[in-house]
Image 1 (cartoon, rainbow, N blue to C red):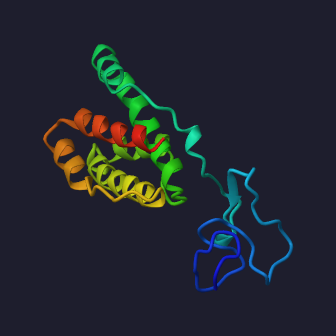
Image 2 (image 1 turned 180 degrees about the horizontal axis):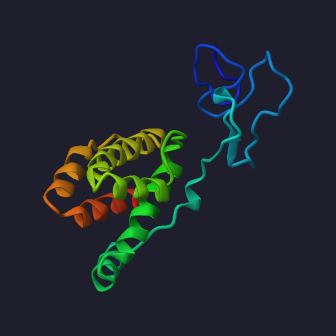
Length: 168
């Protein structure tokens, strides 16, 4: 099938998996308009709203984030981690991505091992966001992992924030 709203091709279902517009088979809900910045993901039979507007992503000064992380002995780094996760989720429209708070909790429960996986997935989500904006993917997930493993996670955060600032 081909979506009448965004032109994306998909196999089956009553809703386009890309933009959430209804197909011709289901006339019960309204297809998205240009004034709507969200859509209801009906394919998973859940009421999940995904915000797809990059104007909700705040550009942050990388130097300020690093300085605040160092001055607060890492407390601001936790806030930064949570916001990086939420901003990347917003830019990539990934409904399967956990929220920033949940990702931080997973890091605590796994003694940091989830943080390595998180760094790689952040790279994938940033690439998905770049692709959706018509830019070439950078494939920096491996670099994020390397910095995270050798104890320079703050450098990985800075690289992620640079990409997010460019996309916002």
